[in-house]
Length: 303
Image (cartoon, rainbow, N blue to C red; front, side, top):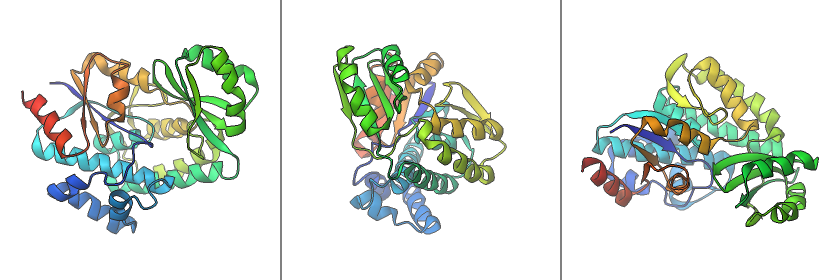
């Protein structure tokens, strides 16, 4: 079976994440213990107890680590390689670890810094994000572009669900226009960072410096959030991972671009993307985020 491995981004975090893998799989335990030692971060408290889990500089490495603990448990139980690798926002870094672009601990350090840079760029600006449901992408793009306000398409999640980013006051000012245009809902999210928009220009530049020393010259192809196309070199990664911070995540476009080459998707670390994929692709998506979901996925794959 040709499989795509997919990895979630911020928003899927919850206390207790990956604990069952830590308790039951040697490889998963070693990943967390090594990360805690090398980064001097107590990932047990963050991931298992939820301490500081919603602070971006800790959220991002915690999700990446949970994804790879889930992947490690899966690989201890089943022999399979990915035909395609991709993620949603932060998840692209998880995909790059699987591709061999850098080690997991190097990736954890990078996304820890990425979270700091993003928070710093948005601090004191009233930045935020808004989800819009039930409205065509083109109409949302048109309203944002014509408004003259700080409002930008940020996450193309699935048909009928697009997240925009910018300044909260500007996003709120457009709520009525989206509803007048036919949106079923336009709701501010509980976030103080405006991801994947021009407000993160400084963070984008700082991220490049962190990536320079960590990325390997070449690696297995990963689907870019910024283009929905594959890349496999340090040169392209430096360009596209910077662009990813200031450009929208083309998630649904990425799924559609690779679905013809694969038989099924497997999400590691949560079930958030599985829910989106049901609205994007006819191909099945299986989730691995705890022992029960691992067993259910293995039962399907083993027939």
